[in-house]
Structures are given as C-alpha cells and as structure tokens.
Length: 197
Image (cartoon, rainbow, N blue to C red; front, top):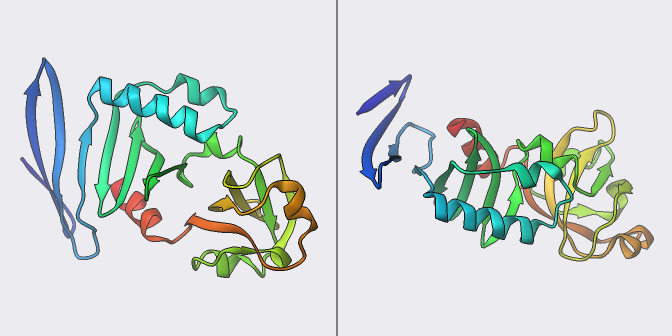
C-alpha cells in the first residue's frame, strides 16, 4: 500500500502475527526526509521498554505510570523515537533515553535551567549551556541527570540537557559548561519528529 502526500511517498507493509496487526513503515521518502523504519512494538517489548524507561528516567510524574502499549518505534539512523498514542514522547540516542521536546506532560516534571535570551540562539544551534547564560535553576538534579532548558522571556522549552554537576555545585560556578546539550529545537531529531508526526 502506498500513500502519497506532496513530495513524500510512504510505503506500508501489513503483517498478521498472533492475531495482532503490525504495521511497519518500510520507507519514508522525500527530498529532505531521513530514511526511517516505523513499527508498532509488540506488547512484551513495549512493557519491557516502559519498565526500563521508568527506571532510567527517574522522572517524578504520575503520567509516566499510566503509559501503556501500543507504542510505535521509529528508527532514523542512530536515533529512535517512541510514539505513545501517536505522540512522540521519548527518544533514545547513543543508548540514552530522554523525553522529546514534544512530550509536554513529562517536561513539567523535570528540573529546569532558565537561560537568558542571549544564550538561546547558541543553545538552539547545538552549543552546551554555559554558566554565564544561566539565570536560575528550578528543582534538584545530580550529575548525569536530565535537565530541561527554558528561555527566560517566554519560558519555552528549548533543549534537553545532561547535567555535568549537581545543582548545588552548578549554582556556585560562574564560568564553563554546566549542561551538555542532548536535544534542542531545530536539531535533526526535532526535524524528524516534526516530519513523522
């Protein structure tokens, strides 16, 4: 079955296995579209993923406990995007799980770093977050925890980062990198999510 939408063509294959219908996106073509495989995870695989994600993420969110299969998995090069209820909620890059910038319910539960508007263009171009650009921290985090970066003016989520220090040490630093940029507005993963959603 092929579906054509503008310059993009989508090819689907249907497989019936154990009375479950599995739909796999075999090709996702287009001028600027990355190659992607998208499929529904089997229930056992999805439950295992959710269990691992809850443990790894350490997010204090009741919404995380209510997530249930079916879950779609889209693989694009070395990136994986997990869709729950058709929404791109999580991603995995280099074996690291994190919520996408589209998973608003989970972002509210994360510790945050607010940055001044002068830092925003650099962060949205892939730069790590430096001490001088940080206005304040919200919440508690340790080294290696995920921290959401928001802009000072609009309080919009602009990046998911990894803490290089715990929050107490980070507050004392006046220069140097504080947060390592993992996923930001305009990156390859963000563009892929926009095109797949």
